[in-house]
Image (cartoon, rainbow, N blue to C red; front, side):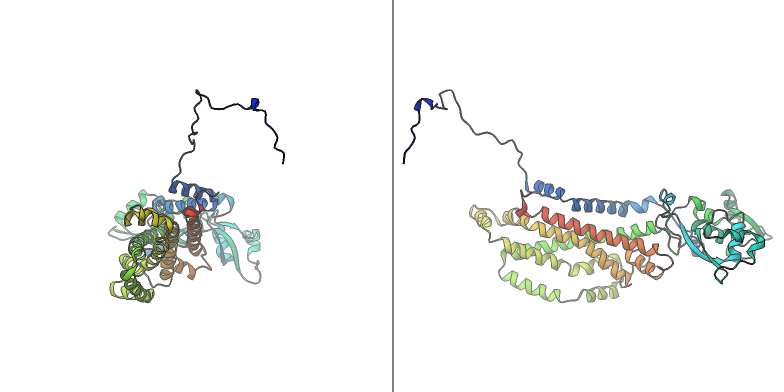
Length: 449
């Protein structure tokens, strides 16, 4: 083998007495565990979108009831005159959606009277044949063999017409209103009196007809907007939904925090130390897990009623078992890893090992579980409220709204659609958000693009 000769005159020494060779300082900034988790989470577009949706939901949960402060009339009969109105949203009504219209089937004579009334302008949107407005042809007109017509109406003006202007002869009790002298003077000042039908001899009681929308809501039908519609009792569904959602969300967060603290504390101790305590406590957990949740909930409701604190106790009585099992498994899984043995060899104490070395490796699974626990509780609580097992009496719940909406969905679908959409969007958003958190907090993915 021939080795080529190298001309030594071409070799030059790099180092001289004036040359200093040193390492180049790293210009990149050190990224911690949580910063790296945040960077990974931001790259998951679906989880970021889900997080934004959750923030929007939480905004409406806490501030939605304040956006439309509305008190229906105290008298239930009066309140129901503005009940079951369809959704009407400013701006969208001009696009033909959420415009407060609905279809009504009525006799042709009634429709003719309403259309020709000075108070019926703008009520009928479409579906009214022009021939009915011709007095000579209207009497002979027959629609598909029957005398009823289905027309599209402005539901807000239609409700006001029915409750305020329907009886032009002033003979129907449905449009009469009894008022004291004080109430009458207040009604005059508000310009809501249509007719004065009678006055008692002493002048203390008035029988009148009023413009009902002005009387009940202090505004005209065209200025009234129920964004999600109204229920049978005239209550604003938008406000009711977010009030019910606020209760379930606050309870869900409280229950998740209690279950997390109890389950994580006991599970980490049991999984890390093991031994007799772990063996005995695990048997106790097996016994406790065998008690049906329905039995716990039913017994507590029978004994203490359905107060909010009773529901919280029912969901935390055995709810911490899942967190306990998960944290115990994770601590038992990681406590024999090489880096844990190295930390123990270097003199690290148990508390530091548990929370500095083991907990960060297990937090991904735990955070995902906690994130999914919130919509899970909301769904379960809504299901039991829907089945009327949980009944908060005067307090609104999403499940109760679903139960009411299901009974009238054929005629008033908005009462079911909006609560159902809230539950569906919440479940999907939290699932995507939880998956993003799981990947973000997974240490094995650190530095992986």
